Image (cartoon, rainbow, N blue to C red; front, top):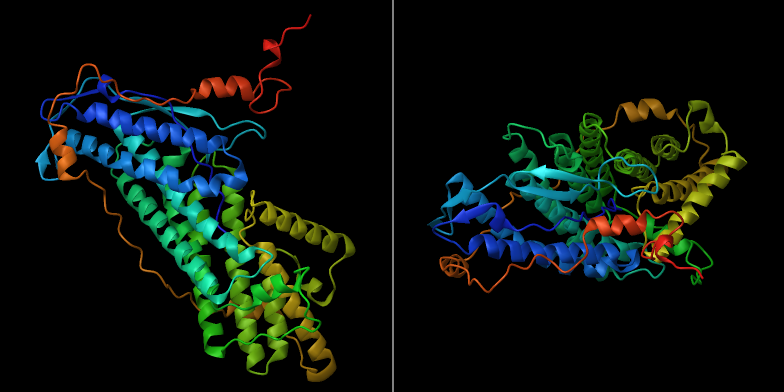
Length: 471
């Protein structure tokens, strides 16, 4: 369950106020027009209902893909490199100033994140590419949502959704990795948390952890069994036992441990970044716990398939501890208390409602979903062992200490910087028509939104009470 990123919004600017070009005089005005389209797309996406935002992501992605080549053309002009085989002579009139609203910085609950004033084309490039990476992650999230609906998808639909989600995460990973490497070459650190080196590196590790973790989803039958078990329309009176090959169970455990390693690295990087959103740091911790818990569960399945039910139960108890559902070794022999069990069930139902509404789901990184799978298997194996097997259940700590190393599945792909095609470069050799003005966007500026949103007692999008006349 990927992190629910919020797409940032930005202010309106005209590149013609900051850059001039003797070789391609139309470049600043063309870049301004493409940026205005993107600005409007981000503003409208923000105002779209959360349940409908997933269907609007292709519009935002298209606007980003249209604008980003112009950014790299401007960057090539400033750095003296060629673009589409042509040299661009670009002169800096004055330092670029632009505002972006941060979405990964810590804020007071109930308030929007602040807008940060940024200088330099580099900051504009970083925020724009980060937004594209967020869009890819959100698209992967939308693909995975089909796996958690009440109606179970067919094996073909499941495989297609997982493949598309995996591709989206790897695209996001390539962008974050590119930005993290490029940020290390900058002399100064940005004031915006979203594009600081530790955060960019953490997001690169996070997307790779998510891409690695979902590799086991296609062939993992247990989550589907849990979803079917709580399906109200399920007419099966008896639980159909699921089977998983022994070799693949051990392989899946190592893949989950690799995902856990990436999440651990992301957690360490975020700890070095000040003022990071608590939602993001909590999600990374939950993802690390989920990956470790899944690894314990698969190793338990491997032990149970070998006839070692006692070891399998110990692995499941260790999984519960890694997920944070038990705190001490003495609790392994006890059943959950009524209050803790009630709290866990309430949180699980709350997550179910979020999935049904398609709003804000997955903020727990799948921790409670994995807890359900572990609970189902633990109840089944304990009952079998108490009535048939009578095997001794060892403590889980020595087993967890002897876990194997993780195994990587993906080879991170390199980000290929997009470039304008030759025809577009040729067209920009002509001077702009004096009667044509660059399109800066039609949507209201963020300052107007803040005055409306922060009005005391006002609902989002409503007029302020000071505008109302009483007679």
